[in-house]
Image (tube, rainbow, N blue to C red; front, side, top):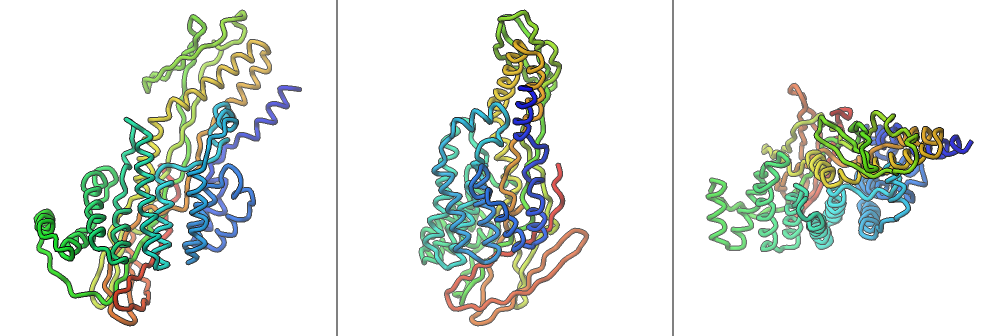
Length: 462
């Protein structure tokens, strides 16, 4: 009776479905571009804003509101996400429960790149609202968060240690604020990041637009030495352009970022001498030991255990349908250049975290097996129940921010005073393409920001 009750109670902690699968209705509506329906589905479950997944609720809500043009409301939810992360204190009860069951039993606190991208979305909202100063605050918060995270990891830092696109955003915001000196510094920092890490780690080369912005701001500041250096660096000569009447900065959020699934490692349990048991995976060259009770006559049956499993999270990619895009205005074409590969960054951040946290996952496995062994020593039936519970509750944390795009691209387009017609051309596989037209009314010296999302993507895959 006691065993049956324990099993029934703990089965509630286990589910075969991933976070993505449990939110299938929301995911389907969002991926189909029915953002209003997705917004309603997000709010349907009142617990989402209060329980273990409230950070995810704040982040997803911020995105769907931004996509509906509700920039101030979006920032209110994103600020709640930021505050939650900053104020979060570990609850030792939920931490202990997660060790005895699985990490989905504790509040979700976000992957490192998710914590950073909150500030990207906030900065973008402020730019849409024509508020460059708060946008600069968010861009600085973004860089500060990256520095804090990497300082915490000592010798096991993330490869995602700086964000080139954040520096571009900062430069754009400084220019809106008529601060071309700091804009130059921001563009220079962006270029150095692309050159030093983004190209090799995330497959993103320096955008040509960034090179032009770096040359232009060096010229406007009268930095002759720097201008000469970057002309040689880029193998070009800068030609000052006439003053712009206005400009369009067009952001293209393409596709959908990855979703989490799980994979597992099987270990053979070898009972040793001196009250120790060893978990071995010969294929991966892994083995670790933990103490077990030396009391009793051995009827606990640890030797009967053949294989045990420990689960880890992994990402599944959602490949975007569209491969490139461009803007056409007054007979000129401007390529939308990729500046941020969120998909590649996500994979990198998770891999780096797993290398740091392998020990925690193995500790969870050891504690579960120790509990099972101790129970078998006292009661063989209860030991069997604990064994089943261990198997059922061994799950990876498959939660992640699933409304992020696969990648971000941008273009800066000069506008004439008055009404401007701009055509967007998106290109898919096998020469397929689609076009969409926009109208922007420009004023002298004004920068217009526009965000366009294409959500067409493949199903999650390895």
